[in-house]
Length: 475
Image 1 (cartoon, helix red, strand yellow):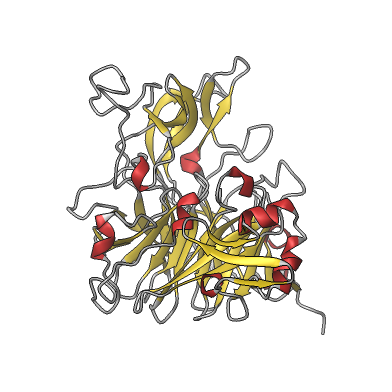
Image 2 (image 1 turned 90 degrees about the vertical axis):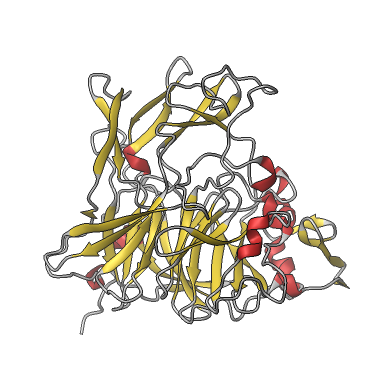
């Protein structure tokens, strides 16, 4: 009998066609498309691609998360930041259904709201609660200030921010109808009820009073009299590269999140590392564990995770390249197991093999005074040194090489929907169908997001379905 190839094992669902589009509507079409100045730029809603999660009971339905809203890198009068094209946009969760005829319909949207029921924004946080000195500009390039009708002044009219603002990237849908959402700035993990109202929060800021209203699946307000707070080193996350992925174990006890890439721990000297971190938070006991994940390249990111059971997970690792523009692009799905990995938060001060291990309050575990990010950044072979110190990273096995399995043209693979038949739904982030470009004169401009270098094929949120299988183990 001939061997079944990975490509042949792609799942077909009635009339489902790979790359079926998610429905969208146009939010705004008032700007010029810089790629074709005679055309208007369409900002599309859309934007459902930051993460995906299975509906807990309906096998045909899945949730998809937007990010902070349509935005673009921008350098203005107050320095580098982002232009928020629709500043009042509220990040949201969409519920979609895959119909028997293979088409996808949107059932509803759930707007994310603060604890008082007010819709949040995607604007930056204050510095003390996750801000990264990111300057917000409006669609016209003006600094967004506390008093929008007055000129910007650092003292009398400072830059605006939103303490509840999020850049949502990770989504876990719970059996009780609530959601946990992670963002890549704070990083914050926020618990929302079925209507999208905040009911709890976890972040690394010990003085954030919102951490005192954590509610877990058992109905507890706090654990053992104390709120759950992330380890302090997570404050050193790299801006826009925070907790990109989130899931919950099937028994609903443990949140598991992955940082997108190496942290700036303690500063940018750790940025060149192939090391990123996985964190597991037991919502019943408050116990937090940390594990190391080894990226195939320092340029790769982890952008999605979904739990198979209490210790095995599927994760997305990719390079953010457009396959139609770069033949070396990589989009991989791995199966990983945390059982054999070392919980670095449990390591205490010790000396062995000429290395001094020590837990530091602000930066976490250090090796001879270097943070783990610095240690690996100095020499990638230091992964072997960590092994000799009995610090074992997560083991992972390649189960889907997406570009060998599918005609997948997108740069960002971020949504991972584990279906009841064991197949995986893959969704891309289309960035509301827009992207920012730098013009010849150095100015910032916007254009539709295109998949090809000739700028003829526009990006859109699309669904693909594959069946994972073991290809080869990654050591």
